[in-house]
Amino acid sequence: MTSNQIYFNQVQLGCHTLANRIVLPPLTRQRAAQPGDTATDLMAEYYRQRASAGFMVTEGTQIEPRGQGYSWTPGIYTKEQIKGWHKVTNAVHEEGGVIFAQLWHVGRVSHHALQPNGEAPVAPSAITPEKVKAFIETAPGEGKLVLPPQPRALSVPEIKELVGLYAQAARNAIEAGFDGVELHCANGYLVNQFISEHANTRTDEYGGSLENRLRFLREIVDAVADVIGADRMGVRFTPLFETTDQDRVYIGLVETDPHNTYIEAIKILEDAGVAYLSIAEADWENAPDLPMTFRQAVRDTYSGRVIYAGKYTVERGARLLETGLADMIAFGRTFIANPDLPERIANDWPLNQLDPATLYGGAEKGFTDYPTYKVPALKTAI
Image 1 (cartoon, one colour):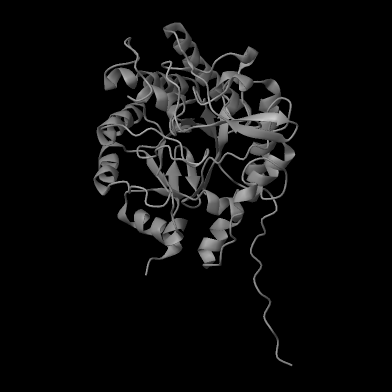
Image 2 (image 1 turned 180 degrees about the vertical axis):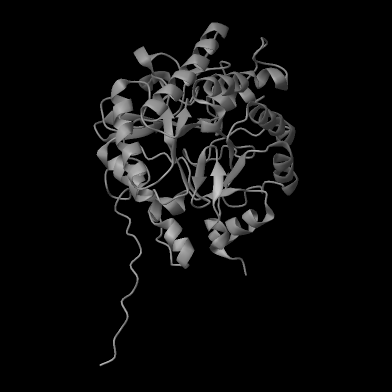
């Protein structure tokens, strides 16, 4: 029988000693204030409720206006947005939590309606994404999923500017009180588009060979490390996360040789001294398992902390921790529905069930109204 106690062994992450190994991963909730895409008091409450996690990462937060692919997602490029995020970091820190901001740029997974001046989305190459949808607002509080148009390929000077925008977003995150940042390099978004042979057909220094396709990642990692320190940075990858027919649920790009592609990418993190690596696994029915050979290669290649996220039960996560191949386990949907998840795991209490209809958009319902566990009162004999 696997013990849940392993979740409560302390672990060092950069300069932080984490109280447990339970992670709130980045989870898009689409509740930023409009106009301006700013974090709200309600969002601060949502994160505060879950601050007993050993470690927290915000929902994806766009680094610039072109980086948005879904209406009502927050940004971190204006003074108002920085001020809004301060509410979140203050709330989490008051509860003793540690929180990083996930820096996000969707690249081609966007729409004219979301882009400045109605322009085409930007990408490494002018290749229209397949089986992917963006989300646009059609009226206040209402919206619809739409197919992305053909993107515009970035020029080399524009790529260099984007590297600078990532660095500035990292500065903004620290100004907003975050303990660090996570680079969203997964799920078929911009950095993943540069890495992928399916989305990047460039013939300059950013395309062709794997080394060239990894150049954008390397430059962003180095730029962010320069401004905030590698010990305050993590990176998220999705090696086997492929796009499916379910709208906006599973988005990703799987390479011909994902093992070599991502081990080479992870070497960049190792060389830079990045604090942690987060790997999101495929979690739909009959999805491929991440091979143990890959997990072992990750551990052999990378000396930082390793977080795995996917369709983890408490017991499955504990088994992976016991192998030593993972340092922390992230629970997504489970943490949405159970704000007191660490306490429930510690005491083996039952879990609330998720309401999928309230994942995206809206207000309190399905966001801050999930109950904490109430211990049944003991009946006294008469």
